[in-house]
Amino acid sequence: MKRVFIPIIAAVCVLGLTACGDSEKGSSAPQSTAAQTEAQQEQTTEAAQSGAEDKTAPVNEETEPEVTEAAGSMGKDTVVVYFSATGTTKGVAERIASVTDGDLYEIVPAEPYTDADLDWNDKSSRSTKEMNDPDARPAIAGDTVSLDSYSTVYIGYPIWWGEAPRIMSTFVESHSFDGKTVVPFCTSGSSPIGRSGSDLAAQAGSGNWLDGERLSGSVTEDEIQSWINGLS
Image (cartoon, rainbow, N blue to C red; front, side, top):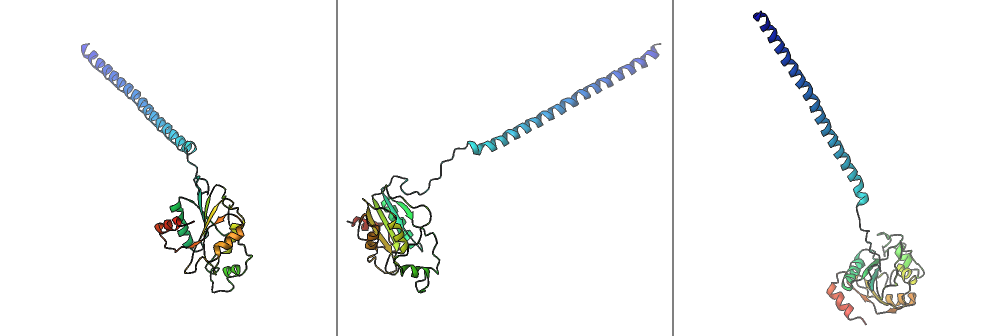
């Protein structure tokens, strides 16, 4: 009988161990799947939060308004107004603004001048026709400048045919210079400022216009300061 029971007991033990092993395997698999699912959920949540932050950041970000070179906006009492067809007068105007700590305002023609327009050897070029017509008044592009807050106005331009370009007449006739000191300046190859400043003063009809000056395109800030110191 003992010989019969021993194999039976052994078989029961083997079955018991197998069942236990299967039970452990069954319980460990769901735990692993659950852990993976939880990790995936966390990654999904983080990605969603990151995406939400990226979308909301530009909305919540505080940005300073764009500061433009609006004449009079900085509380300065000097403005340098200029027209420059080739860039020479612009460079001089920028140096005057630097020396005087003034604002800059560029007179931009509504119809830009081309090289052909500026050909003084061509009797049919645009600039020749304008200078031959004292009543020509080329239009100025964009919003004009308010001179109300300024006490000193520098006005610069190139010399064309011994005079200020007609677009300068457009500008001075459309502004009041009451109570302001106006300082004309010009650039040229060799021509002096001549009567161009006094002609503009007559067209403006207001303001205290000082004698103008021709300035070289290569004038330095020290030379500009010396010129300004001698103004009266």
